[in-house]
Image (tube, rainbow, N blue to C red; front, side):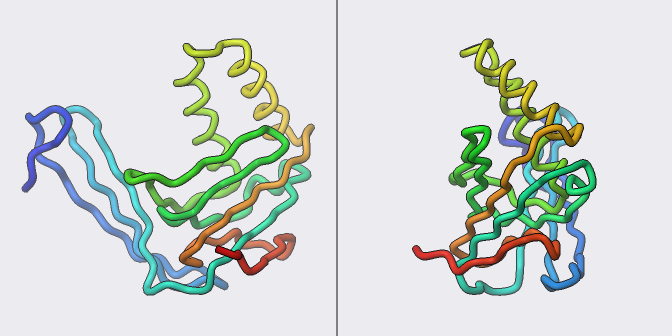
Length: 163
């Protein structure tokens, strides 16, 4: 076992799960976590790279929040109506979730960053709440140069991403 890089007391646990995702293929989801301090790192690995891709989904109601998403660690997420862009970095995590899960992750970051600009953060949190209640439409955009991300819906528009 490997020592936790954060608390230096715990030993990191490792789990992996294989998923077959319809219209997408096979992925492995990995989780490394420390039972002492709660540190975790999640990633989603696919088998090989595909063509660079952009997915655009118009989220127009509560039902759309259930749409399945796969985000690789190289995928950029954009929600233009909120002015949100999530750019992948060195420690970026991949995940398998749904549209609501993406919004919850953004919401968590905004809550954390609230201390730097409370007024702007609170406004953004209100907008996210409206989306979750089906009262605001947005476009969720995934841009992945490896092609290993997906928004799985008949409503999605898929385009080739120019690098």
